[in-house]
Length: 148
Length: 122
Image (cartoon, rainbow over all chains, first blue to last red; front, side, top):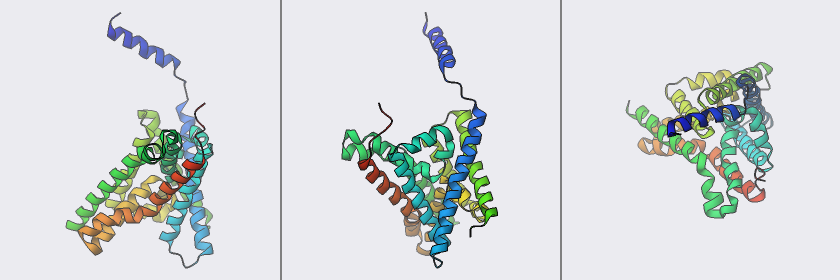
């Protein structure tokens, strides 16, 4: 059996064995869970503005993001966020809670490889690229605005 | 404050953004890290060309809670600090504006990483 034929048979085998999830319901799952997480953020922001009337909207927004981030890390720690993620797909990845989950999840996973090179280093396995690309892009945008 | 119409808009736009992410996953089998990076860069771009602010006025947390809002804060911070401090501001502004979120994520990830153990392995 030559290599190409083998690869084709392997691909056909994988195609047959792969669990078939209907794609369209997951769109709806992502929609309502993502929308709900955003509403939770809006609610926390409104609560801050309600209890601290002198707080600026920007500060209240920052507070709401920080609380969502801490909440998502906690839910990752107790194993609930993974279950939400299995149902919600991108609904749990795209909100800021997904960024928080991407830090907490490898921190838990790689703790057994040690505190420094396990937990602390692997925390940034997904968040690293996010921060690097975001920082570089923001500096480029800032420079363009400065000189144009 | 506590305006039901606003919450409806937050739900619709926030849900729509996440649905676009899910559509990308279905059609291109893109990984979650790439989703985060592309939506963040989309946010930087939207802020740069000035379409983020009007959407945020309309939908509030619906666009600022998705990671697009994180990217937009980075860009807004760099642009604003650049206006007052020059090139130094461009370097300090982006991360200053987003420092709260990054610090909270690092702290929470570290603390809960120490406290809890991974549930996924058997």
